[in-house]
Length: 134
Image (cartoon, rainbow, N blue to C red; front, side):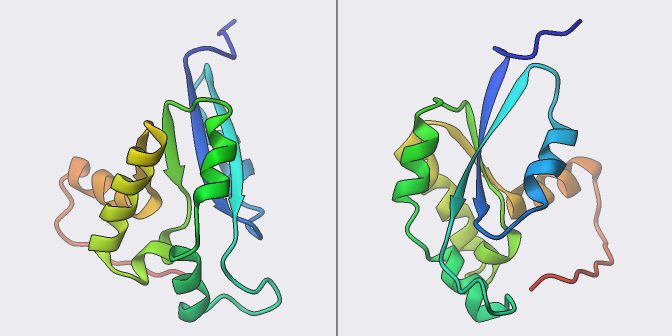
């Protein structure tokens, strides 16, 4: 039996209304890696998420969610909302990861950057993409 604790801890910043990321990450978690979530706000939960809503989430203050994640001393922090950072552009996305790492001390990756890394690793040069998200 593989040990369930001790290999690594992932801290994951998730939009406060998202009900998919936690179960998905539980399915994807490697053996021995624990997942710890902090919810972040920045948009109106009663509105359909659009570009303005996601833009607000990308610009939301992360001090409190990051402080809460620091309690578990994560090895890695994942910013789990692609639309929130990309509404500001790729440079913002990269800068946010740098900011989170500087504030937390943990290696950091955004969902958007993880997608870019995966495509580069696979050597993909052309893609077709469709999404229900902003």
